[in-house]
Amino acid sequence: MPTFKLSYFDCKARAEAIRYLFQLSGTEFEDCRVENEKWTELKPKIELGQLPVLEIDGTEYPQSRAACRHLSRKFGFYGKDDHERFLIDIVCETADDLWEEMYRIIEAEKEKKRELRETFKTEGALKVTANLEKLLKKNKNGTGWFVGDGITLADVMAFNMIYDFIPSVLETEEGTFDLKDQEVLKAFVERFKSNAKISDWLKKRPLRPY
Image (cartoon, rainbow, N blue to C red; front, side, top):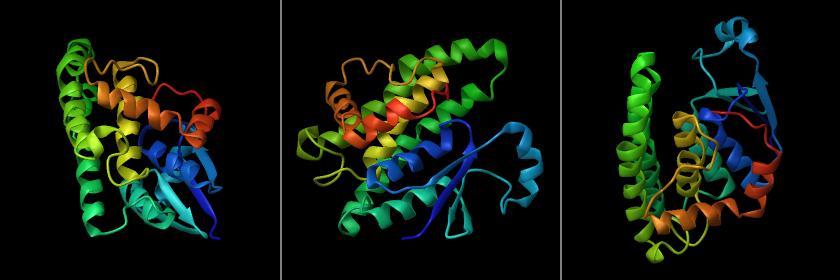
């Protein structure tokens, strides 16, 4: 069994989906949380000068999405054939549509952030979650998972965006984003959160605002 080390800042952000995959697979890993004051010293030593970095048996690999796909293949969360992997990628990219909206807020001037957050809350975020619900309904009317019969990377990414990312941008507590009348997607979030391994991780992980 290879050894795994995940290096990232002391927050969820780009690393939490990777942590979810480790939890779901029951795989031990070193969760290395880099303190901000140490980052300046560490950055020149990192291949691309950015985190997260996934270390496997002593070799470091950059890029969070590449790490998610690699681990999903390794742990059995990336579909049973090319068609399922295609569908999984569609869901993941749909969830990632939120990044454009979120960066608009993150990079805005301080006086504009409140207005942009409100627009994001009532329009931008709900538009993307509505698209996610459409994709969810295509598989067994949304009563199970996004693709196939079990949890895949698609479910991890969708949950991560809804439960972690959106509330962090809105500066609210995790899991508190109101999906309004998107009842099928609400049920999915509760179903994923109720997974024993995920439930355990949510209880024990460090509480961070983003």
